[in-house]
Image 1 (cartoon, rainbow, N blue to C red):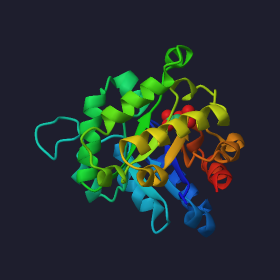
Image 2 (cartoon, rainbow, N blue to C red):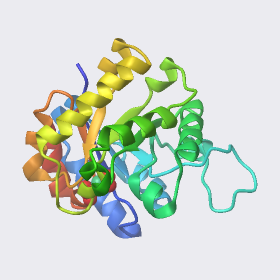
Image 3 (cartoon, protein in one colour):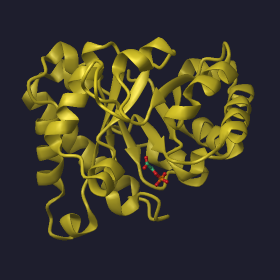
Image 4 (cartoon, rainbow, N blue to C red):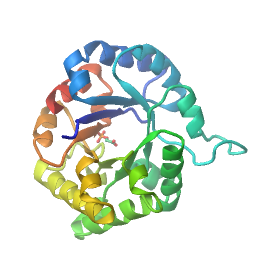
Length: 253
Ligand code: PGA
């Protein structure tokens, strides 16, 4: 049985006081049952990670970074390493979010190096994959997801890949208010799981969590989660209000 994994990606939002307020609001609203039944994590901007970790206190909510660099230290101006993230208490990091791929220009190869470094350094990465609207319209969804998964996970052993969560986020659904239908999402999640079974084993594929992301909100969370291969949600906009995020967690368990 895969435990649902609900995560809030705050992107480049909040400030020093609202990030702490949001963290406190989520921590005080996550009931013991929700904390046991689901993995809950938030991904604040780097600069607020430490104050958010402090604000979450002893709650069951984990914290992750929105990105990580693959080198351990040195002359890499502006970058943040795995060991720095571990040092302040991060558990997770996103790798290959669509905004990093399509706005910042990250390649599959760079994402692969970041993912490898994250695992080697003891972080649990969430590898984001998903097609652009034009790619879906050209029936290229499976090809894109296959390329992003194979290149993103290249060179990693099955044991290492078992530390990874996959997030399927169709780019046309991110921040647009357009959500993939539960059936559309399920189709791709099923495809991803079968692909992983072929690349590694049935055991790996059966245990790995695949989140859906793209305009997930309180009123569609429960329906998305009814699908057999949707194991959680990666939530952007709707994770910026504690009440909304808590309602999504409730819908997901
Ligand atoms: P959204 O973002 O929920 O605002 O669509 C999801 C994401 O980018 O992870």
